Amino acid sequence: MDRIGWSTPVPLVTYWSLTALFYQAGKSLSYWFSL
Image 1: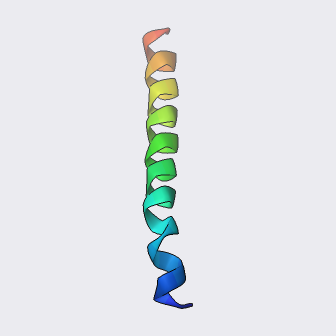
Image 2 (image 1 turned 90 degrees about the vertical axis):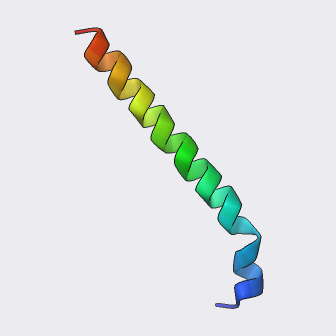
């Protein structure tokens, strides 16, 4: 894999990973608080 092809999508992938992580955390918190 060439590094040039990697340099652009990495921040985008990181951004979406964090978004998904916070989304899951939010669902978990809302689930626990609703108990």
